[in-house]
Amino acid sequence: AARDSEAEEASPARVLRRRGLKELVAELASEEGKAEAEAKEGAARQEAEGEAEGEPRGDSEAEAEEAEGENEDEEVNPVTLVVGIMVFAFLFINMVILHCINYPDPNIRSYIYRMMSTTISVFLAVVGNEGMYSLWVDQIIPAPFPRGLSLVVGYKIKLIVGAGQLLFFYLLLNIIAFKLRNSRGKGYIYALKVIGGHITAFAGITFFGCMQETQIFRHHIGMSVLVICIATACMGALRHVSHKVRVWMHRRDMRRKRADTANDEEQSAKVPLTGAAPIVTGAQRELCCEPSPSNTDGPKEAEDEERLLEDPSFQWADEVSEAEDEGMGLILSFLLRQIALFTIVHRLLPMPGDPLLLPSLQDKLILLSWSVGFLFLMAMSTAVSMHAKRTGLSAHLSRIEHLQSTVQATFAMAFTLCLCRLGEWMMRGMIKDVALCLVATAMATTVAVLVAIVLLDKLADMMIPESESWDAEEHKNKDNKGHVSEEMSGETHGVVNLVDTKSAALRFFDDLASSSHLKEFMLRRIIEGLGLAVGISWEKAFHSSEESVIEGFTVTRAHKVVSKLLFAILLVGVIFPAWLWYLVPKARMHWRDFQIAMETQKGLIEGLNDSGQAAKVSSA
Image 1 (cartoon, helix red, strand yellow):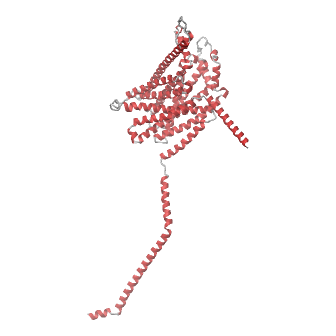
Image 2 (image 1 turned 135 degrees about the horizontal axis):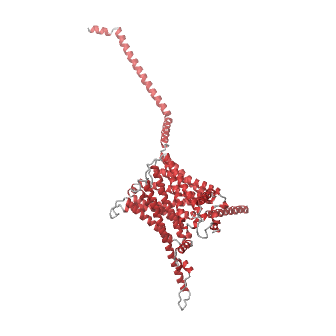
Image 3 (image 1 turned 30 degrees about the vertical axis):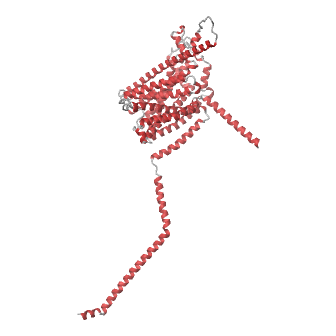
């Protein structure tokens, strides 16, 4: 067996097979080595290529990442877009106002300065009124004792606080005006008239608006209209009482001055030995505003009061009366606007407005029709007032002349307030955020009012020639005083000729259609009313921004009342002096004063140019 196995191993076939296996293994091993070598060589080649091309490939990847980051940064959300638009809008509005206050037309300059003065005055009045009201309603009354009164604030408490605040500002207006009666040339009385009328108006809006929101009046439109009647009666009674108090204060002041003058004369002059009492004539009594025994009847007392109203030293009372009329007109116009909104949305809206309300196109058109209706009523009341002046009826209606101006101001301001709310509704369809919507509305309102002032002034100038302007005609009527009254039959006997009422009505409509002065005056009345729209819109924008700032910080959110009070003190302390020193002197200027200033400035510039040219010639 051993020999057989050895022989088999040594056989040629076995040897060849074993050699073939070895060769095959060697070939396989050599092929694997070649594959490994090729793999290593390919890897080395790839590494070499990677080292040669590595830097450009890394730069392209970095650039791609940076481009993706830039694309992510360039994505704009709505808030960023609105803020960017507002930045450019602020710049645009500032430059437009700069152009308008340097406009070559003196009327436009006067209107722009009055518009800016009204805007600042409305803002200051609202900030002061809301700061004081919030201090009582949100801090002093509901706070626990001893920091407050520990009372639940309801509509009764709000009405009491609102009524007290209205009476306080009404009394403060008269007292400050009486103290400033001798500083009329400095413009303080005019400033008091503007801001006093506004702060009294917003105090009245707070009171009567809160009354309108009570359970008794808010659910039916007829009861809401009743609040307008109550407001008219209350404000009329306040105005009548304040007028009587002003007359009494002025007479007392005149008597005191007269007594001081008489004492000075007695001390400076030699007193006769007989000691005869000085004789006081009737003229001296009239100057002292003391009724003589013959002046005790009614007509004489009326004449004495009319003579007192024409006294130059009593002009401060006229300014206060105008402030009270403007305040009353603004209160009634706000209540009328609330009634107009009641007819549209079928419920009484809150005084600040309903931010969740989304009005339809039909609602906007109805509100626009209300605006046009108030404008028509303003035009008709102006026409009636001017017709009474032309026909001589104003001489018999002098006691209610302030009522005519109040009616005109009421309808003009109601027209303006409806336009403000219409603009807010239109802007709300584009901007959902309340604060941004109000700021955008204020900007759009400012631009629209500036354009409207320029266009309406041009239209008013086209109504009549410059030589027959309203001011020239008024000056002519002042020079020819009494000419109109002589044309009236029965005027010399103190009787108004109103026999034919139909012919009088026909003459009124004829005058309304043919009088160019009337149309001009109506247009200028609309221009004066548009200035209030800018003030109201910016006041709402600032109020909403203030609320956002207070809610945005933890400290101010925890102490809202104190924060509002500090905001009010800071803003009034900064804005009020600038308004009083720089805007009021310009706002109280007549357009003729602007005309003189423009001519003086033009002459000064021409003189400087001539002197500069002469200096160049002499140096050459």
